Picture 1 (tube, rainbow, N blue to C red):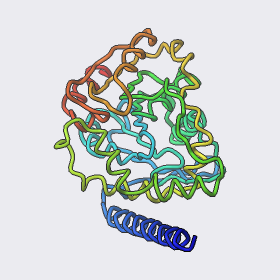
Picture 2: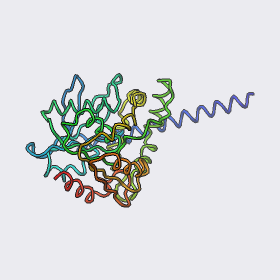
Picture 3: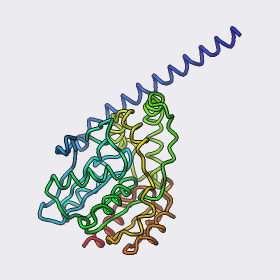
Picture 4: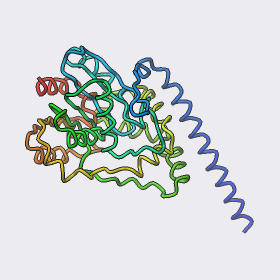
Length: 305
């Protein structure tokens, strides 16, 4: 019995040291990532008492293109293509509430529909009534919610490796304290997030892992209680039966080697969205606008113009 208790004590100590190392290492990497000038290049607007960060570029007289990022992402995700887009469009890229530099209210409703409402209110506050809308991954599902609720405002829709059909399958402990602790120690851990980031690319040479540090700094700084609330509010897949009623002209762009959202969903979108066209990008993962930027931009320009 004494040996068992000693072993248990040593195991707990080892686990505690591992947790401390993980948290310390993650915090150090997150802090170093915050030094990116491009990361900080955002503006702010107050929307219903919430601080919303956004990036704006291009000619204010051009057609508006709104860029919606995915889960754990931010407007920074589009920083590599904004320079190519700003010559053609008036770009608005918000940080969804709860992510990036936007407010992270722990009592907010983080359903996709609620997130889409805040995007719409943000655009309204900026004086934008009509726009083209691009959503990547979870951002695609947010974009679909916006189109369903405000079809008159969206001229054209671009879905990039988009959510919309997949239901929430995250197994977060039901206890808020334990769930939040799990998210901070395990889910927001640098090593796990780095591996997920790498998994998003088929061609590992398409991106340097050091490019992930600014993104990770934003992931790390999301309060674990906010992520817990997000998980509890997740309504992923709730619009699956409504997608077929969307009549907005839609371009679907998908990487054929996407390991996060299977390309079969691209084909389903194309089948159910009556006014859609599908482009499957060969030898590409979950983020074609980075991995195959030229192909992506050519398809985007042709569709919108």
